[in-house]
Image (cartoon, rainbow, N blue to C red):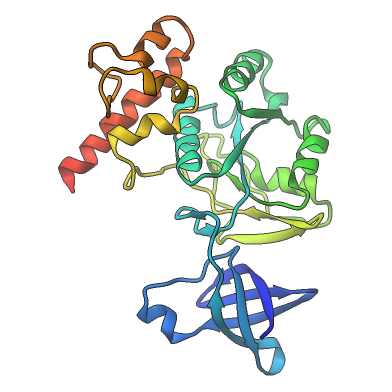
Length: 289
């Protein structure tokens, strides 16, 4: 039975890339009965009918899975955050990092629109590099960071994620000349981006794929408990086993190694503030649901 990868899902159809041919497929009714939804990124078997149409028959096991955006088998996430217009949000970036860490996906931070900001770039870059993340700085006025990012995409399935208006489509147009993805202007009045991407789609590049995903500005902590959260802050992980109490939430427990590391400057204060806010969000959701 022929095999391929789903590169786009739209209006109940799944577009399977097999070699150089794209087959428009529907999913077998069996998937719906089992509560399974094929995702972009899935490796599938399918049957072939006329006019390059068919039905998805089986779905291989997934190495990773994201709910929002809905995509499977991602190797790495390129988290695109603008330094200006819209302004950099450490809290939102930290939230994205928690979700990629919880999904077991490597993250690369891409700081866009460097041409719009004179000061503050080094501080942001140094903060996240110091934690242990790869950080790239890009600008539409120069090829800065584009060459390095293109190398990172080779042979891998990568997803670009971030707020609307941060320049994801502009970045992809620079990475993949000729693709000509739609780009949107940032509202001068609201300083908010307009949504320019409506569905998840994998674009082949250098033996791999890159996904341009719908813009979004909010992620929810439905599957993460307060006790688990600190494990998704990579700078906290080395200190967690040293806490006196198992399941320490690092808020008020005595002999907390994470808080001691914070006081010693081994954990950035801004990251700990994000951690505390996320704990409150998780607790609030538990109270409401």
